[in-house]
Image 1 (cartoon, rainbow, N blue to C red):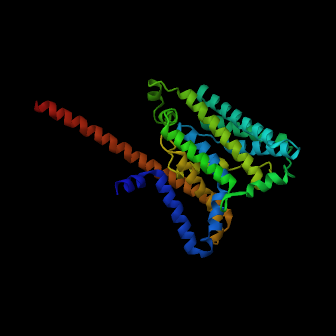
Image 2 (image 1 turned 120 degrees about the horizontal axis):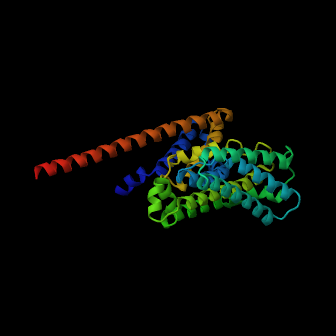
Length: 336
């Protein structure tokens, strides 16, 4: 019973229960949804969102944000798609894409952590630069005629109806979650996000930690861009637009606090599945998928407000506890 209560207190557990409830409600409204094929399709379609949400989780946990992930995804997809279309071998094309993502993350980390520019402003600027670079590189044209094997690989399955991409993303999330929660250096990210000054006092470098967080964020966006290119089969000049909002929404829905220092990549991944499933589930509920962005916005606002209320109540409770402790100490001193 104690283990159950402890599990329910975890933010990831709340998100997982919300996802299950969402599936149950849609199944009741439309019984045709309740099939292994449809549920697997929801998870398979969430791979790109999972990867960018995991990357965004690193940035938010250290107390920052990265609104350039969508453009990074689109730019990498454009470059990798062009290389593959022109006959470049897969490993080299993928390596170029990942290096681009790492470089974008390094630039973001330098601007935010080293130069001290507010993360929202700096990454918004990088977002614009990447979007422009994407247009210049492609000439505004779609990247099409990708190798058939590359496109077909997106439908290759590994565990029943689950695709290879989803299985790899799942293993990656588990590995990163264990790294963050079970290793000393992994806990640096949470420590910096919770109290950068305190982290410095115990020998943790907030600057280095934030730069690493941004590099990881960029690499995740790059991998997501490669998979996006494979799944969709083409890239447009607007590919990746709005993905940053989805990533932020997935993180807060998964229990990551926008103030930093609280949350996990596991929660972000669960939140990503929820966000990805919205447009898919709307169809089964008889609504147009055009409501997707509106619902995403409502969910994001609701969760942020709820999180702010929880943070405020926790702050007030802590303040009252400190006041009560000081009062008891004074009364004890007077009694003596």
